Length: 105
Length: 224
Image (cartoon, rainbow over all chains, first blue to last red):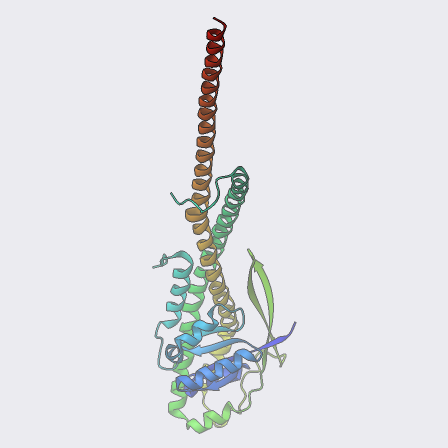
């Protein structure tokens, strides 16, 4: 079984504390950079990629691309600018896909 | 009536009947699969929701502490503090099979055996808020991994449920009615053929009888 890494992508202020936990931290601000980083990480051995909601909002296609692949898992976390609710929104998306309508609301 | 474009023959009828049986069986199996997947999914998604709310709240608290720490210390100092992390996480991804959906299970391995070994900096230049921020992140870390695991599972299962649901619906509303209609059509057609053969035979018989009667009469007339 090969070993995977975990990464965090976000603006500097939001994510550097994560490096203390042993996660690889990548800084990015604009969508192009983020996409490049995600694609690169997905190709190498990163199993989980945490990304700030603010950044994820900029690259919906890229997130969608990896949504139904088993590796990597791209997980949204709130950034320093607060919680945008995009993470829960993503959950609702899954429910809608599975059930046909959102039954949790 | 959606009748398929087939020849109304007995062989086709037998084939279609076999196909219908398979389709019904497949439909039942897929329906069971869908129901079970749905049940598992609902369990997971509830868990996912709770976990996400909890993790998001914790990260927000950490961010608040972080903001306070930054307001009191030079940002360069904080950056240097995190320059060389002591801890290193590796993930082992195990796979679990739920109704033929492969869902991941993450097992974390820490490089340093001491889990509390999370502060990569000396305490001289930094302040307590930074420690609190790192501590609260570290506390939530196992849940963060768990969240990734469950959320990924939910996404994968949602995709599989959708696929299965489509298949069930296609079988239920398209394939099976089509087979049934075609079978009905072929049976009717065969029956019709049979009836027309019977009438034709009766007609032919009539004609033959009439002919033989005429032949007989002519023979009698000739004898007179």
